[in-house]
Length: 452
Image (cartoon, helix red, strand yellow):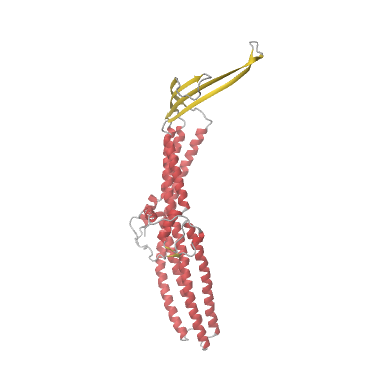
């Protein structure tokens, strides 16, 4: 496990490696034994959050393609065949009176036409602004996809560590039950020979019952932790219970972490910061495009057509029309007043740009604060782990000595019970801080990538 690199490795490169180590679909079951790398690989292929972010990126790409198409000319072809049958029964006289014809007149007319129309907007600055805006939206969506990958990795790590914490505490409870059963057996045998009072037996039995209650609680919490882990992987909750987690044996070393380097890296490489920068650029392009609506637009047009009218006896389905027409046009339009609509849109776009800038500034402040906080937390817990390990060694040695004294009747059960409680508390504290340490690293790496 690499420790304390001077420049953090790219977390996204790590994710690419993870997705290449094997993939599963959302329908696959979790393996009986799961390690952290396998869990991350499953999440990269099954997480609905990543699927949604990918869909947003695809939509942004489609919008950019459409905005590029606005620069190209439009073309259409059309054809029309028509037949009109009519009957005349009345007419107007020169005096303006309606007369009925003795014999109705019937007639038929037929016509056909073909046409090719080409249009091209040669001057409309708003198209350029829209293309810039959609391009920045693609960048923002891509960066948010990267940010979601980091968030999914961090969430899976936290869920994995939490479930692993419960699994370790469950193992501790099981070991403590064996120890309490042994102590209860010793107390009973000593009571049978009159070496201790019945109160010692009752106290030993109470310790055993407390250990069994703790075992039930840890079993329930482990099941909940595994369910939460399964959901974070994009799997059904019922797939989690029964999975054995592989412990993270080697803890990352905090001694070579470079505080200022990591802070600077987070501020430069955080995907959400880059996404917000793209949002600001998109807002600027939108503002520029809104202002361009005050300028005129110029369009070119070209039409090529063929047409013919047929007599009543001619075949309707014929396409060799003899009459032709060609038309070329240049048109310009300039909206002088639209009821302050453009002014309102320009102000909205300006406010959007300001909000994007402030969101970016807020994100930078938050990242610097969080990275420094997690670095302090890692350093503090690292020092506490050294002290807790030594405290556990001392308490275990005292318990060993107290057990010998109790067996030799030189210490009462109350003293033994206190020694047992001290060891139990020391073991739990060490386990809790160990996994708090791993979680602190996960929180840091959500901003700076893999620095282990």
